[in-house]
Image (cartoon, rainbow, N blue to C red; front, side, top):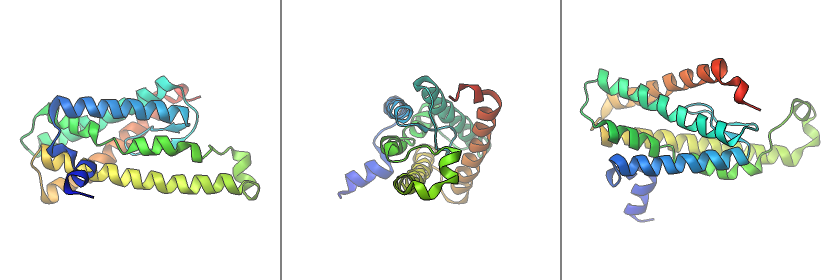
Length: 193
């Protein structure tokens, strides 16, 4: 794999910024949400991915709400750290950092959401379990990739490095995850089918 290909996979922010990265990020997010809804994959938190049926519009709403919350938390963080940045670059790079979730949406078909009865009778569904276990590893890999891309997005966009960058990524994503989980449970639970 060439350096250009590696850069595009881990750090596309050096080549794409501003409106370009926002547009590509939104396209990836839209496609991810639509395929995810079709394959019963719900992106219902900053880093949350679950298997359950939801409408396409709900999937799109979750995806863009998650991005908006991550963006606002990171925006607050770079403001507090008094870092130089352009808002459009930050918004675009954080949208593009969600691109790895497309892989999760595509492979959602290998895992079928389990009902409580299927979980209790787990010996009767070995193929179902195999697909679910494989899918869990895909989810973990894509979340790790998303975190790495978020790290690189802030590194390039805000010219951050060191402890401040690491702290912002870790705390920012954790805070965004708590906020998205709270919002989903408090306000959006009736949207889930």
